[in-house]
Image (cartoon, rainbow, N blue to C red):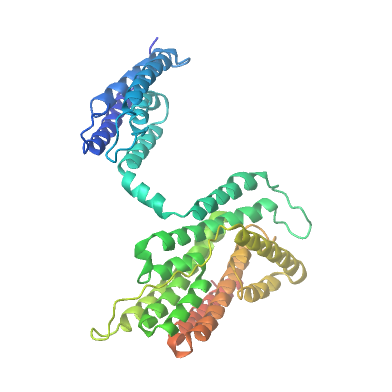
Length: 432
């Protein structure tokens, strides 16, 4: 006995198939060639597919028969269509028309048998891929082969290696497991890779403070060095570079909050107020540097582009191996400091670790690398590490910027470091 579909499912089926047909006709209506499909054909195919599915929703015999008939007809169309040259005189071998017709037929069964969001998602994805053909082809031409290879390496790291790694400690020296090490690497590399791609392929990011913000998402330390050097080499970039250095550090606080939230939501709630406050304070100082130091109209020049603060792809296997090694070393150091000196040992390690990459230290703490420590102590240690890193960046700003050129930004970083340490002290003593 055929079970009647709900009115909502039927309405959704008709709406989605009409939407798909409308996009199809709008895209192919610019050419003189007639192609099967459109605002009438696709709803009919979807209704037909849905009806045949309802006749036998268990074995799909009528539905499969209808699909074979449609496939045979599309095969004959495609065979003939191959003989017709396209606008450039080449063989027209595009599969998009047969594929969209098959999708319209499958849409009937998908809408009636599966959750509605699946039907909506597949239809919207097809329309976006269809209407975005020009932009997608332009993007494909811009992407270099090495970027595709690197993306493939990322899929190997996440989809093959990560599930195979053991989730139990392999040594008594640390409670961190190999899977936790790799997961931390994947999370940090994902943030950095998003920033890297934006800097490389987003034209708007090449000017103003966008590059500094993306540099902070990738590495605020690297961004500070690059901006300080450019401020020294090109006085026209002084105001832009000073504000960018402070902005990158403000973004760093938000990045730390996001990374912590992925692994330890309780600790993230504790850290969110001070980290967000420090970020807002950094943004305010950045705005003051940018607007108060604005040159007069007669002295202004077209803003030179700030070059990327990232020279290498963060997903390259060499960079991944270095991060994993640093994470393991920090994990061992944290376990030793905790066992030998307790909480004070972690605070001391946090102050020292700031002169290098603080991501391994932060990720080690949020994944249980300092077992037995209260969340307030972990939060204080993370704030100390961030403040220590700010002191290093202040030193870099002065050293690479030539003293006075970036002195204001260095002072801002020291100020943010002092505020961070003060909040950490209040947390550690239970006053916060």
